[in-house]
Image 1 (cartoon, rainbow, N blue to C red):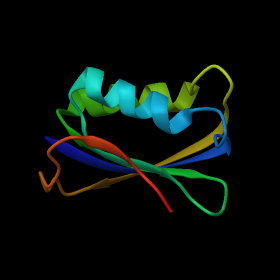
Image 2 (cartoon, helix red, strand yellow):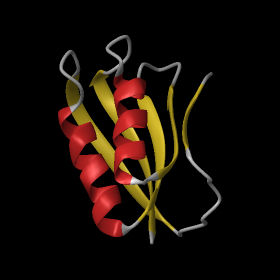
Image 3 (spheres, rainbow, N blue to C red):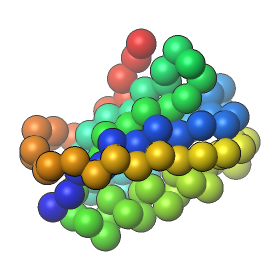
Image 4 (cartoon, rainbow, N blue to C red):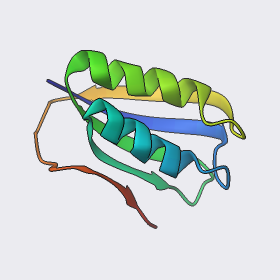
Length: 91
């Protein structure tokens, strides 16, 4: 089990990025959260099986249809197992 703290930069707000990420996470069985940040980026924490977390990160690198992803920064952290599901968080 792994944990990834991810920051996504580009045209990633106002294009349903959070909703797509939530749906992907639920499909893959990944736990955590996603939110818009005031600086225009999207931030997420993903926890789960390594292959599934890597898959959702790959999907975030492509983004939903209207997004333009310019950069994805990944910080691998110690797995905590603190989430029961995946949710959208708000500022």
